[in-house]
Length: 99
Image 1 (cartoon, rainbow, N blue to C red):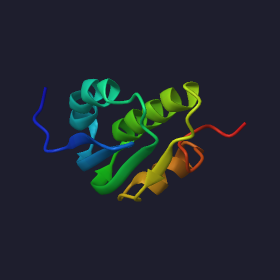
Image 2: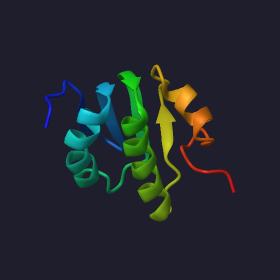
Image 3: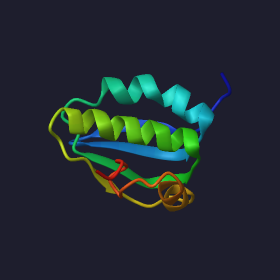
Image 4: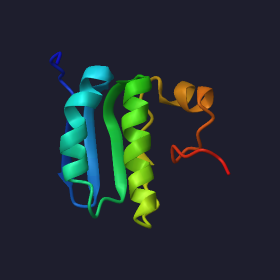
């Protein structure tokens, strides 16, 4: 697996991401993010530099798992690439598919 400078850490009710959320980061961060997901209410992206489609998939799946547990996830931050990918995949701001 390629090295990545991306990271995720738990701060209170938030998962705080940093670095580029790309394919390498999505694979590396998945186990850490899932292990820290219980009780999460916010996904903080203010220190994320860019997001590609694999990073979007990571965030969308985490958000879906939170919604499945009756938590409406809140996102903080709008890294480069996220808005374009949301539009391309027709996702809501909460990274869900519209009903």
